[in-house]
Length: 359
Image (cartoon, rainbow, N blue to C red; front, top):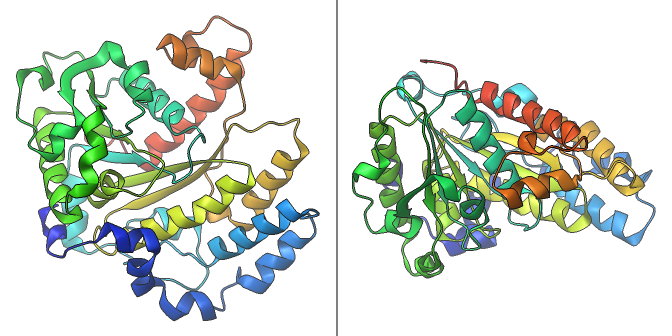
């Protein structure tokens, strides 16, 4: 992974999209893909019947132009993206060999819009993978510390800001015996000071921490991030293997995903092995016609970016997070549907990340 840090990445340029424009360039403006501006606008105009709808249409139109290939695509833009091109690792033999031999895989849960279900997704993936027998490390990079609260029974004594000043090989991170382990590196207030750190340097330090966890024998590292592309999120994306973006079916969330995909495309110029698993619709209210319409539209026009399962707006998920347990431990009939949905998402991510390989 260290080979990815030869260049200096400025987080400010990533935020503004200037760094991304080196990749996106004129191809976005002049593309002639099968889901280009004109066709996407026509596809959505039929159901966008309000001012809110027109704003969403504009955001979706921009998203249509963003193509994310497999891990080695280099962020190429233009042409028709397929599900295979998003998920397949089309990389050189050297990088393929490196990835296939790697024991631990890293997944970032990210969206630049808050309140979309990021933490709920992360902690349930952690619980599910742990129950499958995987050794799971969780790094909470969100200063709100919600994942740290729900996973507090699995504290290791390490705080996430220490990653950026040197995470030593303490015994509390050890995996003892044959029993799987779920280990939390919890959020702390000092994360707020990370914007003073150079992104490339932060990325190198984060990469060293990931290597340490891999050396300890963890199978997967899940990373929760704050809803902004600061140094913490950028560092995580610079070293990650995969990224998953929960979205809410509201105007602001859909508009925000455009920025998230642009940022991912930009960072993949440096971290070519970063795979975008896709967007998962979260907090879906099946009784809300607007949610139903938006989900249908996204699945129809942006199928290559959408995870083929969604998570409903269910109070049992909130109950589970507050009780520090997965939703399948909630003794309510309403929790059954949430369990089915979350288990389906976990299985999808498990397969996409090929976590069963090498076990």
